[in-house]
Length: 212
Image (cartoon, rainbow, N blue to C red; front, top):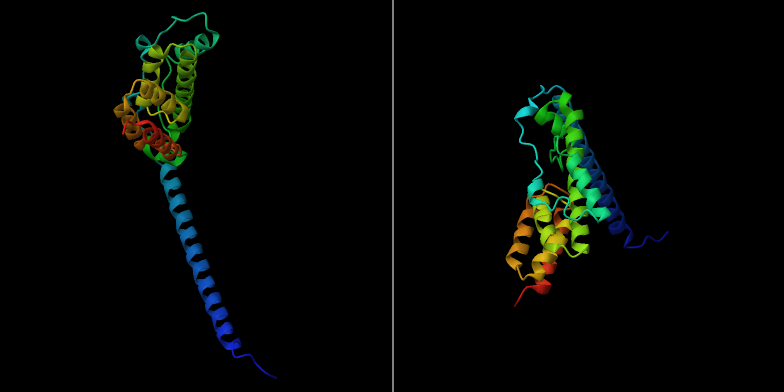
């Protein structure tokens, strides 16, 4: 029986591939095991973290005096936004974007998880309402009144891309390119999956419209 001269090199390559594949599989399994081990250790520690006093936290306050409250009562969308904002007046609001339940328990104590989740939900409602509010104001041509709404949303860490782009568009219309760059700097501080898409969109806007 004739054996091809290429048979042995091919067989050797196959053996090497099998050895490499098994090595990579074992390495991956060890990485996954370590990751799971670290996760469950953090979760164990989090569940036994002592409750911390939440009264000392600096909660988000809504600057109603800076907004055009009740100025455009004839607009249903604007009025609806203002009703929601007023409903949040006496509620605690906290930005916990990017933090997992384990992170929150480790920082504030396991028994505080439920109430802190509520505070974070208030924050999510706030930034969504601010976007809706500003968008309605801009649609009706009240750009000047939308500015403080949008700038406040950015200042409290909103990661809503539309908020950034609406404000950037206003700055662009006024030739305030330094302020668009400032928005990109703000986005760099976000602890959110939306961080990079926002930065990319702002940089694209700058590259397209900045004066040469």
